[in-house]
Image 1 (cartoon, rainbow over the protein chains, first blue to last red):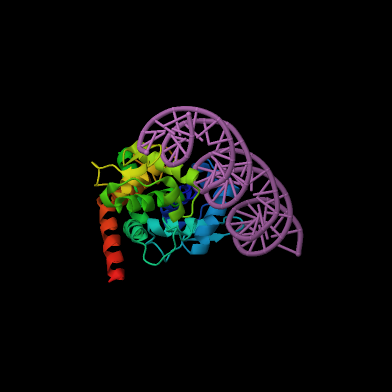
Image 2 (spheres, chains in turn purple, cyan, blue, red):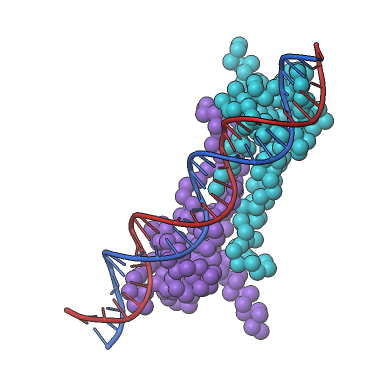
Length: 137
Length: 137
DNA sequence: ATATTATAGACATTAAGAGTCTCTAATATC
DNA sequence: GATATTAGAGACTCTTAATGTCTATAATAT
């Protein structure tokens, strides 16, 4: 019971893309190296983010991936959802309406999701940036 | 990314045991029928709960499982933990100290756990009991 | 002593995650 | 327009964990 590695890779890539000056594109080759992944594998993951609309891709020379300009307010939950699909932590094995146990589990899950929805990637990116600046000085 | 079926079975069994009048023992055969499981499989799950101390088992005739008398305040998290082991939803692939992404994920997980820790099985059992009484009347 | 019940552990089956490889489609540049 | 470059699609393999089953053993009540 844990989030997939793919979600992990996706989150890190998103933050990296947000740190690109001028929102310029980065190729999957470079992105893959950062996390020591094979480019084809990472591209499979990034395609999901593209389809979900969080990043844009352009093939060909000088192409690559960049954050969708219009969507800077991307939450952790958005990325998780794009990669993992629509999951529910718990399905009652006995399928009767209004299982009390299921209700409790769903409520806890909802609260976690709400929290992850309130966490924006851009905040992490800014924080990472300021940490880097501190190190330089 | 979801809780195992075993956790589901364990939770239902626990609530059922809490509804036993006088805290009397129930054999795994009967417990398994309730959820349409094979007795040997369910017993494997219940052994985990026994080792964790949430229920007590007595072998032999008239034996079976019952809730530990001294531990009526059992939370959802207690059962989940007993079955799934100590999980963490997220491990950063890049193992450097203080990964910002990992921090956010861990915090969300902590909050969910805290909620599941505050939900007591006994409450569910009482609620189920009162629902049954309503249906009768 | 015997019937009954839990426990242990080996074993098989299945499903999902993780990753590779190859071929195709789109784009920039010359 | 030809070519180099890059993303996308999809078949494929490998590994791991979940989900059970089966059998033999240990403990207990009667």
